[in-house]
Amino acid sequence: MTVFDASEMDRIAARHPEIFGRSLWQRYRLPFVVGAVILYLVFCWWFFAVGKVISTANWGIAGNYVADWVSYEIRPEINIDADGAMSITYSRFDPIGPNPNPDWLTTKKEMMTRTEQAPATAAPPPAAKSSAFNFMSAAPKTAEVEAQVAPVTRREEVITDAFVRLGAQATVDVTPSQVVLVRGSEKVALTLDRKADAVFANGPLPQWVEQRERGGRVMAYFGMHGWADISSDRVRVRNRFFGWANFFFDTNSAFFGKSAGEVFGLVTTGARLDPSQSNLALAWNDILYNPSWQHLDVWTKLAQTLVMAFVGTLFATILSFPLSFIAARNITRNRPLNQITKRFFDFLRSVDMLIWALFFTRAFGPGPLAGISAIFFTDTGTLGKLYSEALENIDDKQREGIKSVGASALNVQRFGVLPQVLPVFVSQALYFWESNTRSATIIGAVGAGGIGLKLWEAMRTNQNWENVCYMVLLILLVVFLFDGISNMIRSKLMGANR
Image 1 (cartoon, rainbow, N blue to C red):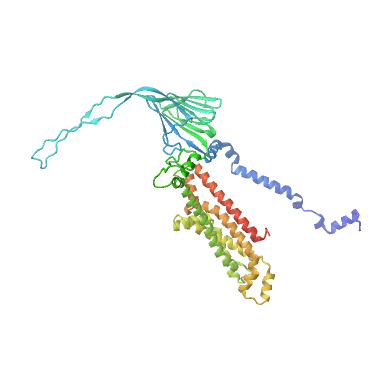
Image 2: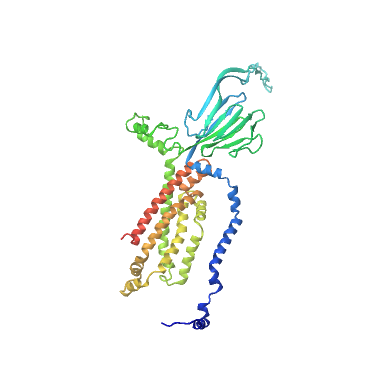
Protein backbone atom coordinates (compact mmCIF):
# COMPACT_ATOMS: atom_id res chain seq x y z
CA MET A 1 0.00 0.00 0.00
CA THR A 2 1.42 3.39 -1.02
CA VAL A 3 1.60 6.01 1.71
CA PHE A 4 1.52 9.68 0.67
CA ASP A 5 3.04 12.32 2.85
CA ALA A 6 1.71 15.86 3.17
CA SER A 7 3.95 17.27 0.42
CA GLU A 8 2.88 14.60 -2.05
CA MET A 9 -0.79 15.31 -1.26
CA ASP A 10 -0.21 19.00 -1.90
CA ARG A 11 1.40 18.24 -5.28
CA ILE A 12 -1.54 16.04 -6.26
CA ALA A 13 -4.02 18.72 -5.16
CA ALA A 14 -2.11 21.31 -7.17
CA ARG A 15 -2.22 19.14 -10.30
CA HIS A 16 -5.95 18.35 -9.87
CA PRO A 17 -7.65 21.33 -8.20
CA GLU A 18 -11.06 20.36 -9.61
CA ILE A 19 -11.05 17.26 -7.39
CA PHE A 20 -9.82 18.64 -4.08
CA GLY A 21 -11.05 22.23 -4.31
CA ARG A 22 -14.76 22.66 -3.46
CA SER A 23 -16.54 25.58 -5.06
CA LEU A 24 -18.45 28.21 -3.09
CA TRP A 25 -21.77 26.67 -4.18
CA GLN A 26 -20.68 23.20 -3.06
CA ARG A 27 -19.69 24.49 0.36
CA TYR A 28 -22.75 26.66 1.07
CA ARG A 29 -25.55 25.28 -1.08
CA LEU A 30 -27.43 23.66 1.82
CA PRO A 31 -27.58 26.87 3.95
CA PHE A 32 -28.46 28.82 0.81
CA VAL A 33 -31.36 26.53 -0.09
CA VAL A 34 -32.68 26.55 3.48
CA GLY A 35 -32.41 30.35 3.61
CA ALA A 36 -34.18 30.72 0.26
CA VAL A 37 -37.05 28.51 1.40
CA ILE A 38 -37.42 30.49 4.65
CA LEU A 39 -37.31 33.79 2.73
CA TYR A 40 -39.98 32.54 0.35
CA LEU A 41 -42.25 31.47 3.21
CA VAL A 42 -41.83 34.86 4.89
CA PHE A 43 -42.68 36.58 1.62
CA CYS A 44 -45.83 34.45 1.23
CA TRP A 45 -46.83 35.23 4.83
CA TRP A 46 -46.51 38.95 4.10
CA PHE A 47 -47.94 38.98 0.57
CA PHE A 48 -51.07 37.00 1.44
CA ALA A 49 -51.47 38.69 4.85
CA VAL A 50 -51.73 35.31 6.55
CA GLY A 51 -51.29 36.75 10.03
CA LYS A 52 -54.06 39.31 9.56
CA VAL A 53 -56.40 36.70 8.12
CA ILE A 54 -55.84 34.39 11.10
CA SER A 55 -56.25 37.19 13.65
CA THR A 56 -59.42 38.63 12.08
CA ALA A 57 -61.07 35.32 11.21
CA ASN A 58 -64.40 34.66 12.87
CA TRP A 59 -63.71 31.22 14.27
CA GLY A 60 -67.08 31.18 15.99
CA ILE A 61 -68.89 31.29 12.66
CA ALA A 62 -66.55 28.61 11.33
CA GLY A 63 -67.46 26.44 14.31
CA ASN A 64 -71.14 26.99 13.63
CA TYR A 65 -70.70 25.88 10.04
CA VAL A 66 -68.96 22.71 11.17
CA ALA A 67 -71.73 22.09 13.70
CA ASP A 68 -74.36 22.53 10.98
CA TRP A 69 -72.94 19.48 9.19
CA VAL A 70 -73.73 17.14 12.06
CA SER A 71 -76.71 18.78 13.73
CA TYR A 72 -80.13 20.25 13.12
CA GLU A 73 -82.02 23.22 14.49
CA ILE A 74 -85.51 23.72 15.88
CA ARG A 75 -86.57 27.33 15.39
CA PRO A 76 -89.24 28.65 17.74
CA GLU A 77 -90.18 32.27 17.21
CA ILE A 78 -91.62 34.15 20.21
CA ASN A 79 -93.76 37.11 19.13
CA ILE A 80 -94.79 39.85 21.57
CA ASP A 81 -97.97 41.83 20.86
CA ALA A 82 -98.52 45.45 21.88
CA ASP A 83 -100.67 44.46 24.87
CA GLY A 84 -98.01 42.09 26.20
CA ALA A 85 -99.53 38.85 24.99
CA MET A 86 -97.00 36.39 23.59
CA SER A 87 -97.34 33.67 20.98
CA ILE A 88 -94.95 30.97 19.75
CA THR A 89 -94.72 29.84 16.16
CA TYR A 90 -92.43 27.43 14.32
CA SER A 91 -91.01 27.53 10.84
CA ARG A 92 -92.96 25.75 8.13
CA PHE A 93 -90.07 23.38 7.48
CA ASP A 94 -89.13 22.87 11.11
CA PRO A 95 -88.20 19.22 11.84
CA ILE A 96 -90.26 19.09 15.02
CA GLY A 97 -93.47 18.05 13.26
CA PRO A 98 -97.11 19.01 13.78
CA ASN A 99 -98.39 20.22 17.15
CA PRO A 100 -94.93 20.97 18.56
CA ASN A 101 -94.59 20.83 22.33
CA PRO A 102 -90.89 20.33 23.13
CA ASP A 103 -89.88 19.67 26.72
CA TRP A 104 -87.05 22.24 26.53
CA LEU A 105 -89.51 25.12 26.01
CA THR A 106 -91.88 25.80 28.89
CA THR A 107 -94.43 28.58 29.14
CA LYS A 108 -96.51 30.34 31.76
CA LYS A 109 -100.05 31.38 30.88
CA GLU A 110 -102.42 33.88 32.45
CA MET A 111 -105.91 35.15 31.75
CA MET A 112 -105.85 38.54 30.09
CA THR A 113 -108.53 40.95 28.94
CA ARG A 114 -107.78 41.78 25.32
CA THR A 115 -109.45 44.46 23.21
CA GLU A 116 -109.53 44.20 19.45
CA GLN A 117 -111.01 46.62 16.95
CA ALA A 118 -113.39 44.69 14.75
CA PRO A 119 -113.07 45.44 11.04
CA ALA A 120 -115.51 48.01 9.69
CA THR A 121 -118.23 46.82 7.32
CA ALA A 122 -119.85 48.80 4.57
CA ALA A 123 -123.62 49.32 4.63
CA PRO A 124 -125.37 48.10 1.50
CA PRO A 125 -126.17 50.96 -0.93
CA PRO A 126 -129.82 51.88 -1.39
CA ALA A 127 -131.54 50.38 -4.38
CA ALA A 128 -131.55 52.70 -7.37
CA LYS A 129 -134.94 53.88 -8.59
CA SER A 130 -135.90 52.68 -12.01
CA SER A 131 -136.41 55.34 -14.67
CA ALA A 132 -137.79 55.12 -18.13
CA PHE A 133 -135.48 57.85 -19.32
CA ASN A 134 -132.21 55.92 -19.06
CA PHE A 135 -130.78 56.74 -22.49
CA MET A 136 -127.58 58.79 -22.14
CA SER A 137 -128.45 59.46 -18.48
CA ALA A 138 -125.98 59.07 -15.60
CA ALA A 139 -126.66 56.38 -13.01
CA PRO A 140 -127.45 57.74 -9.55
CA LYS A 141 -124.43 57.81 -7.22
CA THR A 142 -124.67 56.38 -3.70
CA ALA A 143 -122.21 57.02 -0.85
CA GLU A 144 -120.94 54.08 1.15
CA VAL A 145 -121.80 54.43 4.80
CA GLU A 146 -119.43 52.70 7.14
CA ALA A 147 -121.09 50.93 9.98
CA GLN A 148 -119.53 51.84 13.27
CA VAL A 149 -118.64 48.68 15.18
CA ALA A 150 -117.67 48.82 18.80
CA PRO A 151 -114.31 47.26 19.83
CA VAL A 152 -114.47 43.62 20.89
CA THR A 153 -113.30 42.85 24.42
CA ARG A 154 -112.75 39.32 25.61
CA ARG A 155 -110.91 37.31 28.21
CA GLU A 156 -108.46 34.71 26.99
CA GLU A 157 -105.48 32.72 28.17
CA VAL A 158 -102.20 34.01 26.76
CA ILE A 159 -98.50 33.27 27.23
CA THR A 160 -96.73 35.70 29.54
CA ASP A 161 -93.40 33.93 30.00
CA ALA A 162 -91.42 31.58 27.72
CA PHE A 163 -88.38 29.75 29.10
CA VAL A 164 -86.03 28.05 26.62
CA ARG A 165 -83.21 25.68 27.59
CA LEU A 166 -80.32 25.37 25.14
CA GLY A 167 -78.10 22.53 26.25
CA ALA A 168 -77.19 22.01 29.90
CA GLN A 169 -75.87 25.48 30.79
CA ALA A 170 -77.70 28.00 28.62
CA THR A 171 -81.21 29.46 28.90
CA VAL A 172 -83.32 32.22 27.37
CA ASP A 173 -86.14 33.61 29.54
CA VAL A 174 -88.57 35.84 27.61
CA THR A 175 -91.22 38.08 29.16
CA PRO A 176 -93.11 40.94 27.45
CA SER A 177 -90.71 43.53 28.85
CA GLN A 178 -87.45 41.69 29.39
CA VAL A 179 -85.19 38.91 28.08
CA VAL A 180 -82.69 37.23 30.40
CA LEU A 181 -79.83 35.30 28.80
CA VAL A 182 -77.72 32.81 30.76
CA ARG A 183 -74.61 31.02 29.52
CA GLY A 184 -72.68 29.14 32.14
CA SER A 185 -72.01 31.53 35.02
CA GLU A 186 -72.70 34.66 32.95
CA LYS A 187 -76.07 36.41 32.94
CA VAL A 188 -77.33 39.22 30.69
CA ALA A 189 -80.60 41.15 31.13
CA LEU A 190 -82.13 43.00 28.17
CA THR A 191 -85.02 45.46 28.37
CA LEU A 192 -87.55 45.45 25.52
CA ASP A 193 -88.97 48.88 24.68
CA ARG A 194 -91.74 48.32 22.15
CA LYS A 195 -92.70 51.99 21.93
CA ALA A 196 -89.20 53.01 20.91
CA ASP A 197 -88.68 49.75 19.03
CA ALA A 198 -85.39 49.25 20.84
CA VAL A 199 -83.50 46.75 22.99
CA PHE A 200 -81.33 48.04 25.84
CA ALA A 201 -78.75 46.07 27.80
CA ASN A 202 -78.70 46.43 31.56
CA GLY A 203 -74.93 46.49 31.87
CA PRO A 204 -71.88 45.56 29.76
CA LEU A 205 -72.23 42.74 27.24
CA PRO A 206 -69.94 39.69 27.26
CA GLN A 207 -68.22 38.47 24.09
CA TRP A 208 -70.94 35.98 23.24
CA VAL A 209 -73.60 38.74 23.08
CA GLU A 210 -73.40 41.20 20.19
CA GLN A 211 -75.22 44.52 19.64
CA ARG A 212 -73.84 46.62 16.80
CA GLU A 213 -75.68 49.83 17.71
CA ARG A 214 -77.41 51.08 20.81
CA GLY A 215 -81.04 50.06 20.81
CA GLY A 216 -80.56 47.70 17.89
CA ARG A 217 -81.23 44.00 17.85
CA VAL A 218 -79.09 41.69 19.94
CA MET A 219 -77.47 38.43 18.85
CA ALA A 220 -76.57 35.90 21.54
CA TYR A 221 -74.41 32.89 20.66
CA PHE A 222 -74.44 29.72 22.74
CA GLY A 223 -71.74 27.77 20.92
CA MET A 224 -72.77 24.32 19.70
CA HIS A 225 -76.19 24.69 21.33
CA GLY A 226 -77.48 27.46 19.03
CA TRP A 227 -78.16 31.19 19.14
CA ALA A 228 -80.90 33.77 19.72
CA ASP A 229 -81.93 36.93 17.86
CA ILE A 230 -83.66 39.47 20.12
CA SER A 231 -85.75 42.41 18.85
CA SER A 232 -88.21 44.59 20.73
CA ASP A 233 -91.23 42.60 19.56
CA ARG A 234 -89.75 39.23 18.65
CA VAL A 235 -87.24 36.68 19.91
CA ARG A 236 -86.03 34.08 17.45
CA VAL A 237 -84.33 31.05 18.97
CA ARG A 238 -82.26 28.43 17.17
CA ASN A 239 -81.86 25.37 19.38
CA ARG A 240 -79.32 22.96 17.92
CA PHE A 241 -79.32 19.19 18.47
CA PHE A 242 -76.70 16.66 17.43
CA GLY A 243 -77.71 14.29 14.63
CA TRP A 244 -79.78 14.39 11.44
CA ALA A 245 -83.47 15.05 11.98
CA ASN A 246 -86.11 13.00 10.14
CA PHE A 247 -83.47 11.12 8.15
CA PHE A 248 -85.81 8.21 7.41
CA PHE A 249 -89.34 9.57 7.87
CA ASP A 250 -90.50 13.12 7.36
CA THR A 251 -93.12 14.84 9.49
CA ASN A 252 -95.80 13.95 6.91
CA SER A 253 -95.08 10.22 7.17
CA ALA A 254 -97.32 7.89 9.15
CA PHE A 255 -94.15 6.48 10.75
CA PHE A 256 -92.90 9.88 11.98
CA GLY A 257 -91.99 9.97 15.66
CA LYS A 258 -92.10 6.20 16.10
CA SER A 259 -89.19 4.21 17.49
CA ALA A 260 -87.36 1.56 15.47
CA GLY A 261 -89.21 -1.19 17.34
CA GLU A 262 -92.60 0.37 16.61
CA VAL A 263 -91.74 0.75 12.93
CA PHE A 264 -90.57 -2.87 12.75
CA GLY A 265 -93.79 -4.05 14.39
CA LEU A 266 -95.94 -2.06 11.98
CA VAL A 267 -94.00 -3.31 8.97
CA THR A 268 -94.13 -6.98 9.99
CA THR A 269 -97.41 -7.57 11.81
CA GLY A 270 -99.23 -4.25 12.10
CA ALA A 271 -102.53 -3.38 10.47
CA ARG A 272 -102.29 -1.56 7.17
CA LEU A 273 -101.92 2.17 7.52
CA ASP A 274 -102.76 2.63 3.85
CA PRO A 275 -105.35 0.22 2.39
CA SER A 276 -103.79 0.45 -1.08
CA GLN A 277 -100.34 -0.89 -0.09
CA SER A 278 -98.53 -2.83 2.60
CA ASN A 279 -96.80 -1.11 5.48
CA LEU A 280 -93.42 -2.24 4.12
CA ALA A 281 -94.11 -0.62 0.76
CA LEU A 282 -95.41 2.50 2.49
CA ALA A 283 -92.32 2.77 4.71
CA TRP A 284 -89.96 2.25 1.78
CA ASN A 285 -91.86 4.82 -0.27
CA ASP A 286 -91.70 7.34 2.59
CA ILE A 287 -87.93 6.83 2.89
CA LEU A 288 -87.26 7.20 -0.83
CA TYR A 289 -89.44 10.27 -1.26
CA ASN A 290 -88.54 11.93 2.04
CA PRO A 291 -88.84 15.63 1.10
CA SER A 292 -86.22 16.71 3.64
CA TRP A 293 -83.47 14.35 2.48
CA GLN A 294 -84.63 13.29 -1.01
CA HIS A 295 -82.86 9.93 -0.81
CA LEU A 296 -84.02 8.63 -4.19
CA ASP A 297 -82.96 11.80 -5.98
CA VAL A 298 -79.58 11.86 -4.24
CA TRP A 299 -78.91 8.19 -5.04
CA THR A 300 -80.00 8.69 -8.64
CA LYS A 301 -77.68 11.69 -9.02
CA LEU A 302 -74.84 9.69 -7.45
CA ALA A 303 -75.41 6.85 -9.92
CA GLN A 304 -75.43 9.48 -12.67
CA THR A 305 -72.03 10.70 -11.48
CA LEU A 306 -70.62 7.16 -11.54
CA VAL A 307 -71.91 6.63 -15.07
CA MET A 308 -70.36 9.93 -16.16
CA ALA A 309 -66.97 8.92 -14.73
CA PHE A 310 -67.09 5.40 -16.17
CA VAL A 311 -68.30 6.26 -19.67
CA GLY A 312 -66.03 9.30 -20.01
CA THR A 313 -62.97 7.30 -18.91
CA LEU A 314 -63.91 4.32 -21.10
CA PHE A 315 -64.26 6.44 -24.25
CA ALA A 316 -61.01 8.26 -23.46
CA THR A 317 -59.18 4.95 -23.01
CA ILE A 318 -60.55 3.57 -26.28
CA LEU A 319 -59.52 6.64 -28.29
CA SER A 320 -56.15 7.29 -26.64
CA PHE A 321 -55.04 3.66 -27.09
CA PRO A 322 -54.56 3.72 -30.90
CA LEU A 323 -53.48 7.37 -30.93
CA SER A 324 -50.68 6.62 -28.48
CA PHE A 325 -49.11 4.19 -30.99
CA ILE A 326 -49.08 7.00 -33.55
CA ALA A 327 -47.54 9.43 -31.05
CA ALA A 328 -44.78 7.00 -29.96
CA ARG A 329 -41.62 7.69 -31.97
CA ASN A 330 -40.31 4.15 -31.75
CA ILE A 331 -43.59 2.71 -33.06
CA THR A 332 -44.52 5.18 -35.81
CA ARG A 333 -41.41 6.36 -37.69
CA ASN A 334 -43.03 9.53 -38.97
CA ARG A 335 -41.91 12.58 -37.02
CA PRO A 336 -44.53 15.06 -38.35
CA LEU A 337 -47.30 12.59 -37.53
CA ASN A 338 -45.81 12.04 -34.06
CA GLN A 339 -45.73 15.78 -33.39
CA ILE A 340 -49.27 16.43 -34.66
CA THR A 341 -50.66 13.68 -32.42
CA LYS A 342 -48.71 14.87 -29.38
CA ARG A 343 -49.82 18.48 -29.90
CA PHE A 344 -53.39 17.19 -30.13
CA PHE A 345 -52.91 15.52 -26.74
CA ASP A 346 -51.45 18.77 -25.37
CA PHE A 347 -54.46 20.74 -26.59
CA LEU A 348 -56.96 18.38 -24.97
CA ARG A 349 -55.24 18.22 -21.60
CA SER A 350 -54.15 21.87 -21.43
CA VAL A 351 -57.79 22.96 -21.05
CA ASP A 352 -58.99 22.05 -17.56
CA MET A 353 -61.88 19.63 -17.18
CA LEU A 354 -63.96 22.33 -15.50
CA ILE A 355 -63.54 24.62 -18.53
CA TRP A 356 -64.54 21.81 -20.89
CA ALA A 357 -67.58 21.19 -18.68
CA LEU A 358 -68.62 24.85 -18.96
CA PHE A 359 -68.18 24.71 -22.73
CA PHE A 360 -70.20 21.53 -23.19
CA THR A 361 -72.88 22.69 -20.77
CA ARG A 362 -73.35 25.71 -23.02
CA ALA A 363 -73.35 23.49 -26.10
CA PHE A 364 -75.52 20.58 -24.95
CA GLY A 365 -77.34 22.12 -22.00
CA PRO A 366 -77.13 20.92 -18.37
CA GLY A 367 -76.93 17.17 -17.99
CA PRO A 368 -74.66 14.14 -17.90
CA LEU A 369 -73.73 14.42 -21.60
CA ALA A 370 -71.75 17.59 -20.86
CA GLY A 371 -69.93 15.86 -18.00
CA ILE A 372 -69.12 12.77 -20.06
CA SER A 373 -67.75 14.94 -22.87
CA ALA A 374 -65.58 16.98 -20.48
CA ILE A 375 -64.07 13.84 -18.94
CA PHE A 376 -63.62 12.26 -22.37
CA PHE A 377 -61.73 15.25 -23.81
CA THR A 378 -59.45 15.83 -20.82
CA ASP A 379 -58.58 12.18 -20.24
CA THR A 380 -57.95 11.49 -23.91
CA GLY A 381 -55.13 14.03 -23.85
CA THR A 382 -53.69 12.86 -20.53
CA LEU A 383 -53.96 9.11 -21.15
CA GLY A 384 -52.64 9.52 -24.69
CA LYS A 385 -49.52 11.25 -23.38
CA LEU A 386 -48.97 8.63 -20.66
CA TYR A 387 -49.54 5.73 -23.04
CA SER A 388 -47.19 7.11 -25.69
CA GLU A 389 -44.44 7.66 -23.11
CA ALA A 390 -44.89 4.10 -21.85
CA LEU A 391 -44.56 2.81 -25.42
CA GLU A 392 -41.38 4.81 -25.98
CA ASN A 393 -39.78 3.16 -22.93
CA ILE A 394 -40.41 -0.48 -23.86
CA ASP A 395 -37.65 -3.04 -24.34
CA ASP A 396 -37.06 -3.46 -28.10
CA LYS A 397 -35.58 -6.94 -27.66
CA GLN A 398 -39.03 -8.52 -27.58
CA ARG A 399 -40.03 -6.71 -30.78
CA GLU A 400 -36.86 -7.81 -32.49
CA GLY A 401 -37.46 -11.40 -31.43
CA ILE A 402 -40.99 -11.35 -32.90
CA LYS A 403 -39.71 -9.75 -36.12
CA SER A 404 -36.98 -12.39 -36.48
CA VAL A 405 -39.54 -15.14 -36.97
CA GLY A 406 -41.19 -13.24 -39.83
CA ALA A 407 -44.26 -11.94 -37.97
CA SER A 408 -46.37 -9.23 -39.53
CA ALA A 409 -46.31 -5.64 -38.25
CA LEU A 410 -49.62 -6.17 -36.46
CA ASN A 411 -48.36 -9.32 -34.73
CA VAL A 412 -45.18 -7.53 -33.72
CA GLN A 413 -47.27 -4.96 -31.83
CA ARG A 414 -49.61 -7.64 -30.49
CA PHE A 415 -46.96 -10.01 -29.11
CA GLY A 416 -43.89 -7.78 -28.80
CA VAL A 417 -45.35 -4.54 -27.40
CA LEU A 418 -48.73 -5.15 -25.76
CA PRO A 419 -47.53 -7.66 -23.13
CA GLN A 420 -45.10 -5.03 -21.87
CA VAL A 421 -47.47 -2.06 -21.69
CA LEU A 422 -50.95 -3.54 -21.23
CA PRO A 423 -50.72 -3.83 -17.40
CA VAL A 424 -49.53 -0.22 -17.27
CA PHE A 425 -52.35 0.92 -19.59
CA VAL A 426 -55.04 -0.80 -17.55
CA SER A 427 -53.56 0.40 -14.27
CA GLN A 428 -53.58 4.01 -15.43
CA ALA A 429 -57.10 3.71 -16.83
CA LEU A 430 -58.33 2.33 -13.51
CA TYR A 431 -56.64 5.13 -11.62
CA PHE A 432 -58.26 7.74 -13.86
CA TRP A 433 -61.66 6.06 -13.45
CA GLU A 434 -61.34 6.32 -9.66
CA SER A 435 -60.06 9.91 -9.91
CA ASN A 436 -62.82 10.94 -12.29
CA THR A 437 -65.41 9.84 -9.76
CA ARG A 438 -64.27 12.81 -7.68
CA SER A 439 -63.83 15.09 -10.68
CA ALA A 440 -67.34 14.35 -11.91
CA THR A 441 -68.66 15.77 -8.65
CA ILE A 442 -66.88 19.08 -9.26
CA ILE A 443 -67.93 19.50 -12.87
CA GLY A 444 -71.47 18.56 -11.90
CA ALA A 445 -71.61 21.76 -9.82
CA VAL A 446 -71.38 23.87 -13.00
CA GLY A 447 -74.36 22.15 -14.59
CA ALA A 448 -72.85 18.95 -15.95
CA GLY A 449 -75.32 16.81 -14.00
CA GLY A 450 -74.77 14.25 -11.30
CA ILE A 451 -74.55 14.71 -7.56
CA GLY A 452 -72.31 17.76 -7.94
CA LEU A 453 -75.26 19.89 -9.03
CA LYS A 454 -77.32 18.56 -6.13
CA LEU A 455 -74.45 19.34 -3.77
CA TRP A 456 -74.15 22.89 -5.08
CA GLU A 457 -77.89 23.49 -4.70
CA ALA A 458 -77.74 22.40 -1.05
CA MET A 459 -74.70 24.60 -0.34
CA ARG A 460 -76.18 27.64 -2.06
CA THR A 461 -79.08 27.85 0.40
CA ASN A 462 -76.54 28.17 3.28
CA GLN A 463 -79.01 26.28 5.48
CA ASN A 464 -78.94 22.62 4.42
CA TRP A 465 -75.43 21.78 5.56
CA GLU A 466 -76.55 18.45 7.00
CA ASN A 467 -77.66 17.50 3.47
CA VAL A 468 -74.24 18.57 2.21
CA CYS A 469 -72.56 16.34 4.79
CA TYR A 470 -74.81 13.43 3.77
CA MET A 471 -73.85 13.75 0.10
CA VAL A 472 -70.15 14.25 0.90
CA LEU A 473 -70.14 11.05 2.96
CA LEU A 474 -71.80 9.16 0.10
CA ILE A 475 -69.17 10.45 -2.31
CA LEU A 476 -66.36 9.47 0.09
CA LEU A 477 -67.85 6.01 0.50
CA VAL A 478 -68.01 5.49 -3.25
CA VAL A 479 -64.47 6.83 -3.76
CA PHE A 480 -63.11 4.53 -1.04
CA LEU A 481 -64.93 1.56 -2.59
CA PHE A 482 -63.68 2.28 -6.10
CA ASP A 483 -60.17 2.94 -4.85
CA GLY A 484 -60.12 -0.49 -3.21
CA ILE A 485 -61.46 -2.18 -6.34
CA SER A 486 -58.99 -0.45 -8.66
CA ASN A 487 -56.06 -1.21 -6.32
CA MET A 488 -57.05 -4.87 -6.23
CA ILE A 489 -57.28 -5.08 -10.03
CA ARG A 490 -53.98 -3.24 -10.49
CA SER A 491 -52.27 -5.59 -8.04
CA LYS A 492 -53.55 -8.58 -9.99
CA LEU A 493 -52.39 -7.13 -13.29
CA MET A 494 -48.94 -6.14 -12.00
CA GLY A 495 -48.45 -9.55 -10.35
CA ALA A 496 -48.17 -8.25 -6.78
CA ASN A 497 -50.17 -11.16 -5.35
CA ARG A 498 -48.54 -14.00 -7.24
